[in-house]
Image 1 (cartoon, rainbow, N blue to C red):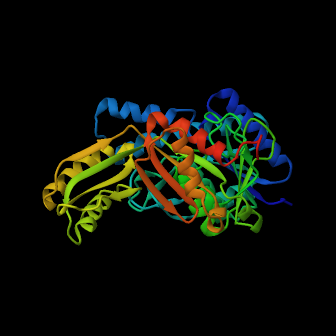
Image 2 (cartoon, one colour):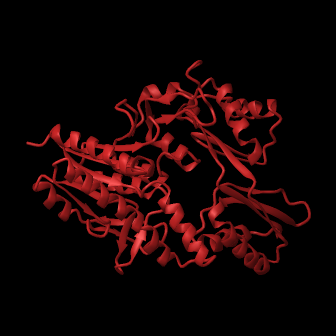
Image 3 (tube, rainbow, N blue to C red):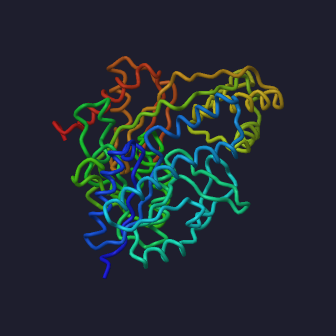
Length: 409
């Protein structure tokens, strides 16, 4: 009798080479022998996806998104087949599947597809045979039978969605760090591991640059109540539990500091200050499937205004092209862009009931003579855009200001 079903997801660093794949196989087999049914979701080996994208851009500066998905989806197929072989060698039966083979149905949005449904019949059939199931993360198939991918970090979404559909008792995300930290430990050496964090806070941190989990996977987990355990694949230590908010969490004003260096600022100059113009601008940008983050509109003094906004750096060239077309339509002026920015953010559900948080953040930056270019706030987060060169110093200053380190925490 099984103790229940566990979903384990292993990131690219966890399966970067043969030795690490063998280590993952041992961990999976150990879980299986403890009496659990196991479904494993894997990412591509190491930086395979980046290398495949680089190959595509050596062919053409503007590869077809459909063909890009066809290309990069192969990375996960390699790692799931190799892991199955490693598990076989340990004497346990395992079978590997692509996203399409386990019925992960998506829409037609290539490179950032959304899951419509999962037909888990094949998985259940193989579980009944007591096999370990290994699924290629990051991918699915559209209703038109085209291979699609779920966006950067999409293997996390695969794992959470499968955990929900299968009714898993646990969804374990294995990575190269021991959990979620108050800041990037590579920037802040004494950053503290967070034992427990709410879905809301983790969603914000993931959206704001913390690269441990994909934001969409947290959104999905929050919607369906899938608890997540972020752990290191290199140790047996307890990591960070991501779950529903509990009252004790409100006592912590700021849970963490995030930095995102993968955004660019675009400014449309001399935009006519008339009703409906902003709506037209951002409708046209949305039509191109470009995600806009922060937006700042200057006060109009001459009947025209500048509108600045941030977009992912990967969408910058497309955004500039669209912005130029929009500018001509509405009678605006030049388009300016800046890739040398970093977005620094603080997150904490305790902000709802504590005042002065923004003032402390701005004071921390002012004390280091760091200029703020844009500001955005929500109920549980505050974000500032600064020059990229000041990014690390800004994170350290804010982390210290809020006493988030293990020495002070």
